[in-house]
Image 1 (tube, rainbow, N blue to C red):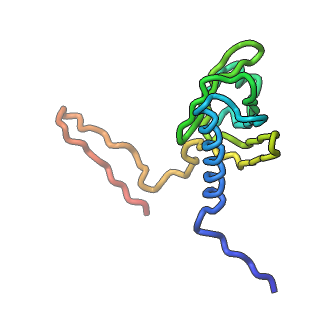
Image 2: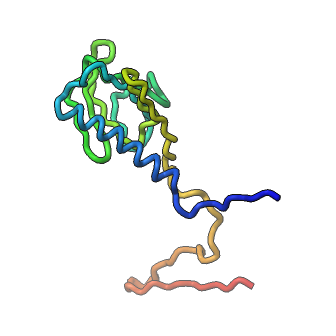
Image 3: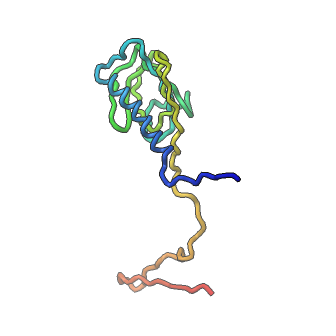
Length: 160
């Protein structure tokens, strides 16, 4: 006899992912308060470059079209953190850049100084409404009357 577990009506996976992303936010917020990393701590943060809300220079998007890992260790500046995202200044090949990254775009966080690592499922990027068949009530559009009035004539046709 095989026991099947029913699908949950509570999105536990999403709740856990959100809570773990809040851990990243809290850690970065602590560092932002002093603009310095304590002790030997340093972070590798991986994120989706095309996720909604990500704002990075175009040259970085071209170089990392899907995912990018940044390192916060010795040279970073203006680290700012709020409930939804963080921003930080970093140099890439001696060219400074500001990166704005929502926590929802993060797929990995690693602090090798203490062997702490979190992995996240990439959140789906909404692509707009899915295509659908024409609804039965999607008939011809209304057409104004030719007599110059504001009356709109509607032609209701019945399907047989």
